[in-house]
Structures are given as structure tokens and as C-alpha cells.
Amino acid sequence: MAERVLGWGDDDVATARERLGAVVAQLPETTAEIDEYGNTGFFTRGSRFAWILPDHHADGLLALWCKADRHEQQATVARDPDRYFVAPYLGRFGWIGAHLDAAHDPDWDALVELVEAAWRRSASKSAIKAFDTSH
Image (cartoon, rainbow, N blue to C red; front, side, top):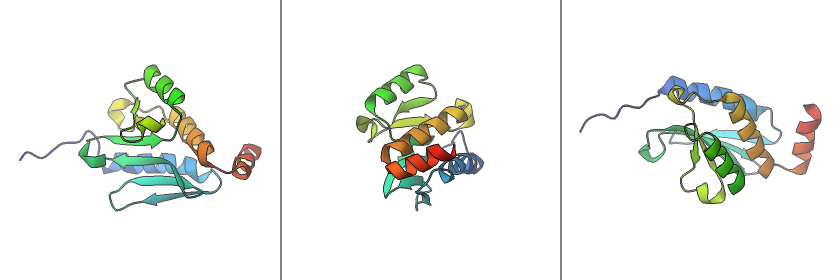
């Protein structure tokens, strides 16, 4: 069987974790956890609001999935289908997938906005108020 070649590597995963982890670290009441499969989950109040998925179920992608509503998901994917997609499994709940590999030229500013919006969907009112007051 031929070895599968991914369009990204460990350095790309590290960059995504560093960039997005720095964003999440600024959000009150959040934690980040790397599971046994190398996925990085971002949580608030015990609820996952985003995660970085390298080669999830051997899909070959380096992706970010973020909690959203169906309207936001459809608008985001329609606006830029080369960078964004409906997240498998969770897409029916509105989750957005975003490509993080260099070949898809991620818009890191837009990804920051997606992560923050996803956090706001699960964060406590006091955490949101604390963040808004400090920014």
C-alpha cells in the first residue's frame, strides 16, 4: 500500500495550535486539551466550542471546527468555499470547518473572529462581560 502524503506537516499543526491557542488564552474561563489523537479541543464551562483536527478520521485535512449557527455556517461557507466547509458530523448543528494548511491560505484574522464567536455561544455572561470590558 502506498504511503499517503499530506499537504501539511507537524510544523503546520504547531503553528495552528500556537496562533489559535493564543487567541483562546485571552478568553476567560477557557481550557485547551490535546487528546490522544492529536486533536486540540478548546473548552469553556466544560463545553467544546472549537477544535483543531489534524487528519481527523484519515480525512487528510488540517482543519479547525467552530461552533456556529446554521445561518452563520451557510453564509461563511458560501462566501469562501475554498477556505471553509460544513464540518462533518457537527455540521447539522451549524459547526463551520476551516482549512488551516498553507495551501488554503488561512485568513487568520477571520479565524480569530470565528473562534471568538464560537466561544461566545458557550461562555458565561460574566466571562463575556469580563472579556468585553478588557478589550
